Image 1: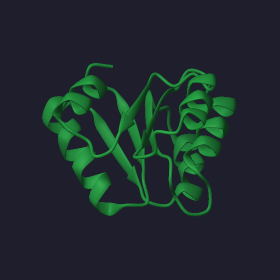
Image 2: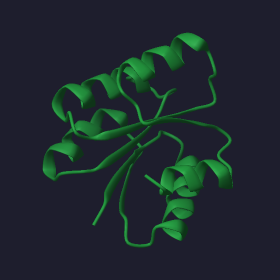
Image 3: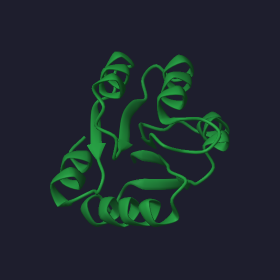
Image 4: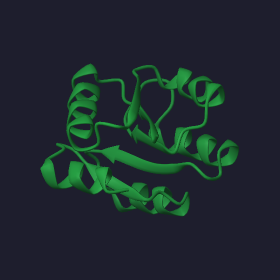
Length: 117
């Protein structure tokens, strides 16, 4: 079973992403985390295969959270989810080895690509 952690401070974004992925991959176990400061604790409790992290969140931005995840969970597939298309952010995310950047607003094509991982 694939375990997925979605980290986004927007309840609406969490809901859209979770429902969209469950429709495509009903066997995936998806955990939602609205507080980015709690994400590392969730990852420490059980092995996850995929983390989808929003860029713009209070307390810690998505790049810094992805960096921490990469340091402690080298095999974890990472996706940055963002409405921000700045080249510097894309470059930083790719340097961390993300398997994708999902641009908001999410659509069926983006959800299909995530579900194919």
